[in-house]
Amino acid sequence: MSQQPKGDEDDLGSPNSSRSVNTLLERTHYEADKLVIYQTDFQSESELLEAALENEID
Image 1 (tube, helix red, strand yellow):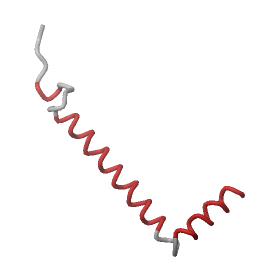
Image 2: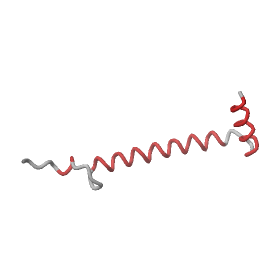
Image 3: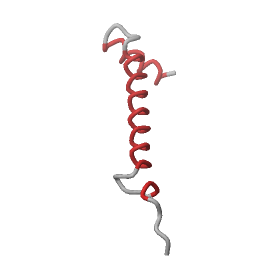
């Protein structure tokens, strides 16, 4: 049986898993940025709630 190179191992120390963690973090930051931008479109929390209710009724 031949051994696989260390880089192909799928445990926590491998480059593959750290790359997927970085991708997940980037995606999370992107989603958080979108949420912040969306919330700043409204003057107050009550406007945000009103808009949410209007969207549900339509």
